[in-house]
Image (cartoon, rainbow, N blue to C red):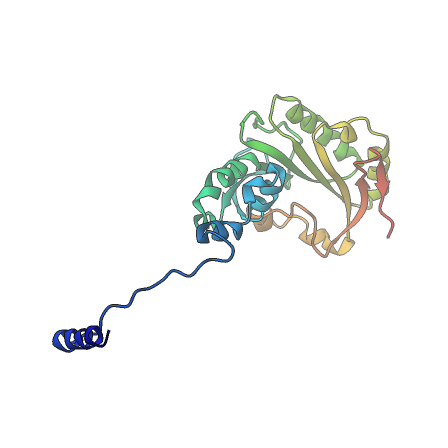
Length: 244
């Protein structure tokens, strides 16, 4: 034994390097290392597609493009582009499908609009949502219903329609009465939202700012000059007054 040790020392001295040590793989108490690593991966694709779509929606950014409606009506198509899908390539295909599936068309009546039917069609297979923003009194609301009915009556893949009405010239109570008794507005098959906002008198001079209407209409009347006064109740199907 001593001779063997002396021989190893002699070989080490001659080569100038210590003898290689043997490495023994330690036993993994939980089993295979790869298997354990997989356990830490969240099973994203086991979620229902509806839940995955909600997550994809948080990854989308809006890209608005103005289009010609053929009349004095502000019209925009809204496309959604996925963000951060480079993080994981396996999400890209579904995220792109979702982005195409929620394309929107936004319409808003501008100054001088004569209630003509817009030169638009909803047959574009990518348009799933329609947002309409109207500024009207009682008489104008009735006239608006004609072109809206014609537009929605054409074949389409629209599954979501949202309509917001800005009541002007103290016409709020009259518009609420029309919407409470109308058989048209609340019977739209794809209706998801129908709301009325009352404009403050101090906003009269700023209601139709040409630059704002051309570039970025207020599609939700969320500014300081508007107060919600009525909403459609999706559960009951009734139009209800919003108490101050």
